[in-house]
Length: 402
Image (cartoon, rainbow, N blue to C red; front, side, top):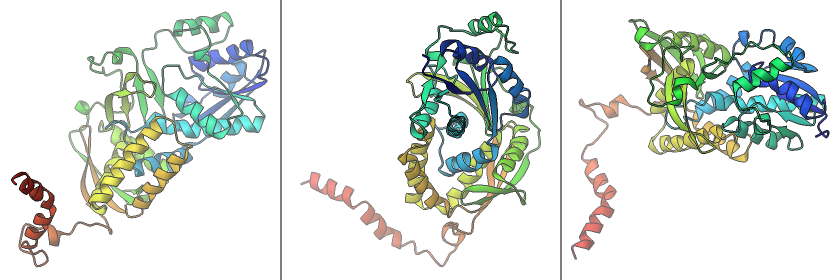
């Protein structure tokens, strides 16, 4: 395996990637390891001491790339503008982060002259597909190394023993219960009691949001300004995409908003159970839906729903850098140009509800929709419309009576 001279590893400083660095050096004839970490808003505490830890584990360099603003602006906002929600409830927090991380990893690999990239994804999950599909689309000449598909270690205990034998320090322990992934949009939780779908998640699962049962007894109202299906201001204050998300995360988490418990279909074929916390994102999606209800006619709304469903599967399955992605985004953006307005969202006991909404492009007309007296709608016209609308049914029945 001496053909690999330099590898760029997607590095988090956790147990898996700490073990991967020495394993790469031993397995690939003392190749050079460059650690790469993408800051997608997982929290500053996750980045403290990361550079030093990577070097101490055997990496020659450690690149920490700030992607927070780009992540929200160029990946999250286009995705939610499309209406993408996976299997009814999952707001794609982990899925949306993978293409920007993979892209930045490839950029570092090309910059330092690496001939391989490496990730710590398991052979059971979706992330291996997402990362490697992006690598293939962006730099197919790079070799991909996936240690979990190669080494003979199968447990946390194996990894801890491996590091101990090499005197490599780690803060991980064998008693870790949950597998978590965090970024600016959400945090996911898997493992522990969640592996049995009949177990209710304990309070120890949730880390970002207040238990809705313990949330304030008074609601809070937020006014979101929406332009081209993007949130641009909160309570009249213009904010960057990242800053808007951070503010909404704080506000919504305090009311227990954004918790989802789903048993989903992984791309590899198995079902898995995950608990997701997406507080600010839930508020944003609620506001966008409120605007959509006002501005899209029935066929456009149905088309947007179809685009959103297709885009949700595309993001979940790791096909961001494909022609299909560009096509779906173009369809989404053509509808988004009318998605402008203002929505008031009420936060209360785990729920985000759009209670007020208005748009300069609204197709709602009180003059037409009123149950009171009006001068614009002649109800007699409905008779002819219904006769034509049901004409095929009428002819079918007449034919059957012959």
